[in-house]
Length: 163
Image 1 (cartoon, rainbow, N blue to C red):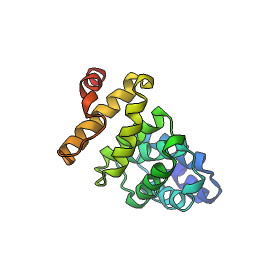
Image 2 (cartoon, rainbow, N blue to C red; image 1 turned 60 degrees about the vertical axis):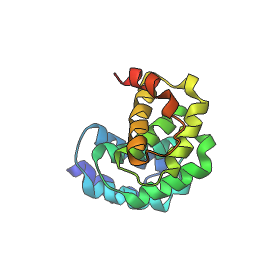
Image 3 (cartoon, one colour; image 1 turned 135 degrees about the vertical axis):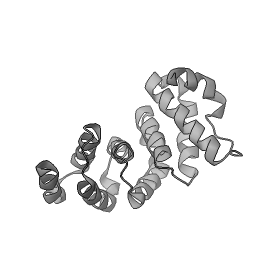
Image 4 (tube, rainbow, N blue to C red; image 1 turned 90 degrees about the horizontal axis):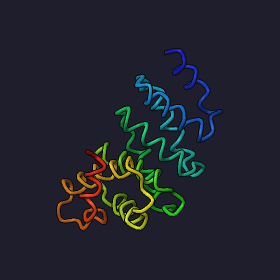
């Protein structure tokens, strides 16, 4: 549509929050905008070091929700997450883990990093975050059955949140 076209035309003027909010809005509204998502993926990847944790979490959540593949963007964000894990709050971490699981991420390091931090902060997780992490734990068990995933021992409490 016209809004996606105009947003794509102005993408160079967007700051990281503008990019994250734009893809979040299109994903939340379930409006297909593949070309816009592609343009934002390219620009976001180029400027990923300027993204704060919420911008990164919202961006991957939006791409996963919209079903838009952006492997190189996810790689750039995964790298930032591993380096800056302490900066992410529990909501950011749950959204990131969920998004990476939804796209079928095939590198377990991101799940180990996010899972280890989640275990340290279990008391601070709300029901929605536990529900997301339940789905992540199931994904990890299917993909890597021999992996000692930090959240596996908490699966029952997460399942109760999911139900």
